[in-house]
Image (cartoon, rainbow, N blue to C red; front, side, top):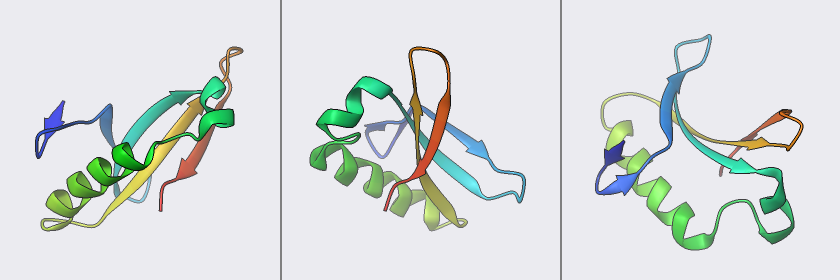
Length: 75
């Protein structure tokens, strides 16, 4: 999906109803930094556009080869 000319992995609502902008990464990305500076700027641009309508949170889901998922907020 594209928002503000930026590709977003997906949008999801958490149990409280907060809109989450979700980026998915493999656990192999942990040694190199989960999200690059350039990608972080793009995701913040998406957050700014969506936050004009409602509160949002940027989230990174890191998935291991075994299928475990770690949820990390992106600040």
